[in-house]
Figure 1 (cartoon, rainbow, N blue to C red):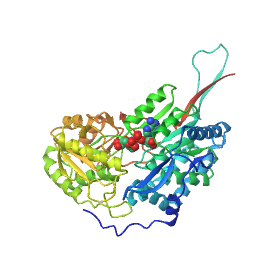
Figure 2: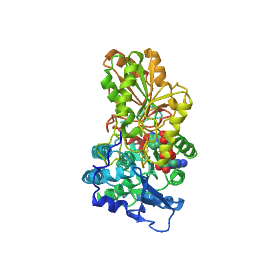
Figure 3: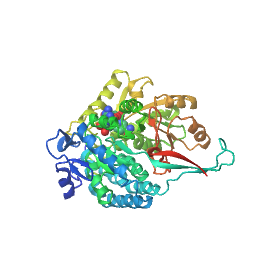
Figure 4: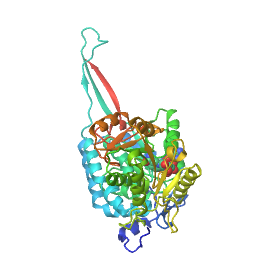
Length: 501
Ligand code: TXE
């Protein structure tokens, strides 16, 4: 399974220089706090070597960043620009990301561990199209006009309309699985709406955000419009608790999302929360085995399973269950393993030693609970944070392995005998982010789609997202939707105006 490490992508000189820098905090248009701060180590998941360190921002640092964003917002240096001017700067930002794509992709792979192919073609490669889509929405913000029907003073006439106004300072808290991409999903709609932003990337994967903010300013973003602070959960909590923050947009674990929602409730802080999933894929009897297995591999093992939308629970019609498990196990055993910088490696390290141990703990627990590991399940004997891609069967629905998001290269496979049983199994989860259905039977497809409790339902595909297609969760998978023409709604307040004349 191991690949020789002989064809690693050579790093650009600029990548080494950037990563080796003494990183500070980007506040009010410049780098600050370069000395004397508590620092957090950043590692290369491929070998466990320390590659950088970043500031663990204190409450005072958070306060400085939020005040910068607040002052910029109040002064109107960003929200006061003509929408077309904001759009132009954001489009230039997209151009710069595109121009620096290889550099950003290499930084992402070095820090996150993911395949350079995914970094090149998804994380960074997908960014300019998304950024341009959202930039274009800057000039599409609009309200409504309407006639007034009640409460009229006799003889008076009224003109009534709504305006969409930016909500204020947005605190954006990002996770480590698609660090730059998910960071952009937050800062782009906030900026397009006219908000100012303080972004806190995950402490595990802060590096691309630190490069991104330089490109944003090179594009013409005014000082204070986008600040980037690094730090751990305490830094994130200080951001949530800051009284000048008007909205938090968060992607991460359900537990942290719930903690943020509780803090937010006290002052009616606006929140958008994307909290992961334990997503089902349902394979009907007519699904061709080869295509079904390919779908399961992409759905379950893409980005080493560290995908909120990943298919981690596979439900397979009993008539094709045995051949499906055999073919999937064989495919998974055949996946080549190696560092993300090796473009030929299909399985790469997971993001951290802590996360690797958590995944292995889930696998051990599943074994103790009576489930059977039919492929993988071990920690390979090599440096770096690797976990073998794993297939588990005989996992009863109430087991932890069937209910908890593992976020690693691991799927469970379970047979079903009827449509009702497949739907009941698929919906038996506190989460509801995505689901996929694999069949060419149109009538069955149309019957399943409305019964699946998930924010996205894919048919004969999985993990497919698009800037125009809303993305978010049912149930504990979160609140709110990213993408789509309504992207800016949750970054704006609706103001009703009624003028008597
Ligand atoms: O998440 P956390 P972790 C899931 C996945 C993973 C698990 C744990 O199952 O195994 O979450 O990952 C910041 N106030 N997802 O521990 O803690 C933190 O610094 C404010 C799903 O990394 O939620 C980081 O920037 N912020 C997921 C971010 O929250 C706080 C993607 C996420 O960290 C905070 C990643 C606090 N009290 C993990 N505590 C998805 N939905 O795609 C931490 N943070």
